[in-house]
Amino acid sequence: MVNNNFVLAEKFCTHHDIEISFINSLGEYGLVDVIAFENSLYLANDSLHNIEKMMRLHFDLGVNIEGIEVIENLLQQIQTLHHELKAANNKLKLFDND
Image (cartoon, rainbow, N blue to C red; front, side, top):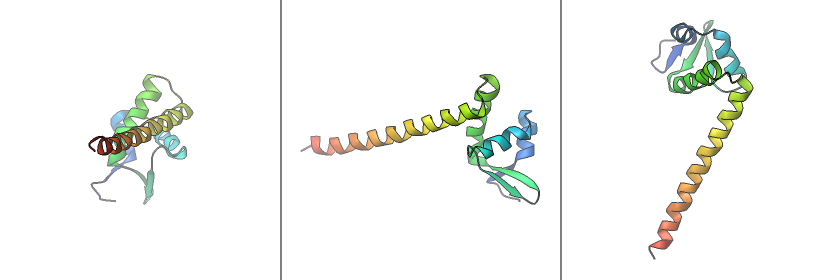
């Protein structure tokens, strides 16, 4: 798979000195999309930042995969609420100008 949008998971793991099993675990919990193509696993370039964040949670702070899943869900909820609050504030500004 020659594509600038994906990186070989094995290369990513070698670069970060981690086991591929960590990436597989993230994939099993639905925290990252792992693409299998011709007996190799690939990761989307736009997910690498999130994977590195999850690595820090796991390896530096000792958070297990289930904990990472909870943290990611809470962060997603916060982001959703932030967008909803911003939209509500924008609507209020429209009425405030009247």
